[in-house]
Image 1 (cartoon, rainbow, N blue to C red):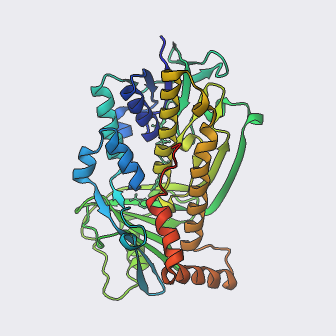
Image 2: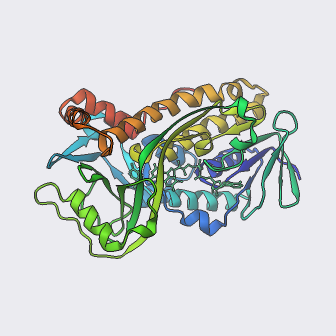
Image 3: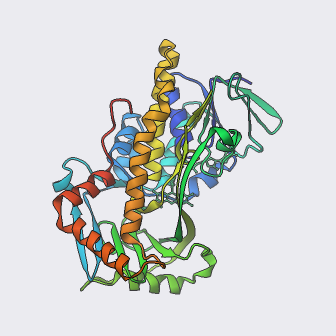
Length: 390
Ligand code: FAD
Ligand code: DHB
């Protein structure tokens, strides 16, 4: 079998690449290890930057997003017994975030691709990469797919990055001494915007998916398992960390429908291109979720890769392909810094001493008192505008 672009992984990165390529008339095949149902049900991120929303809309994928996504013009930072709103409409006029679950983006992308005749193979076993320098090919389940290029969009634990000899990849990483317990509940959101709450008990986030579904996260010890927490204990801890301002009551009147644990990690692999193999999204970089950047970074990588491949097939020019790593890494490192900064700003660190805690409080107060600092948070959170190369 032969195709132009062999794509490993049907997450947001791989699916968006397949979709943007088919709109340019470039054939691809997507190989995914899990079932379609599994990909569509995986609960993960929920915050789409302005640029991500615009990208999806421009690509003809904006209809359900516009109808069902919720546009938010601010977030709340809650600490020291008070809530402080970061008003995007004042600080970054015209830019906002949209709350729309990642699995909804994935559903939209799978449907659009399949309707357009894109070849997505689910439940494919033992995908392997051969000769990514000259004559790239993918083998899987006894079959062989020859390609012009391979896109490794197979997430942090995928095989694409691992296929590159270690001495050709430089890894930058940081681990955090906590994880996030993610909770989905059929409960009306208790706030109209996201609440990032820093307390001595640890960080907690109140997000939402719709008028009847709430999404929460709790900072927990790194070795935590979802089954360590009873639903009663989850509600009690969410109340303790959120009911810290006068008059706020957390609505807990409904079932918890999913509990998961997300590891907190910062990670960048450089470069993002090896011969005819390109890494995109979580396969190349991971951020702790505090800044809600992971999915948005994957979309930004794919914008560049789709354009670069489009230019190559239209004119034979490899200029953009050659600059793929350099273009992507500007945004990647900005998001790395912002995600690390938000994580340090809001979490309780077990090894922090009294001095560290005072510094953290000063930093929080500075963010909500200084327009300059609040604007810095806001412009990163809603997403910096794309450069001309993105
Ligand atoms: P992925 O979504 O990971 O997609 C990779 C795909 O490749 C998957 O479908 C996988 O099954 C497939 N695959 C892997 N290996 C192979 C193989 N060998 N062969 C074939 N297919 C393979 N971000 C936030 O902003 N907020 C959050 O709350 C948040 N929570 C998260 C929770 C978890 C548990 C994880 C893992 C990530 C979370 N993220 C969050 C990050 C965000 O979801 C990711 O940045 C985003 O999914 C990246 O998209 P991707 O397409 O690059 O990778
Ligand atoms: C969500 C996830 C995040 O990591 C974040 O910072 C904000 C919201 C969410 O899943 O809704």
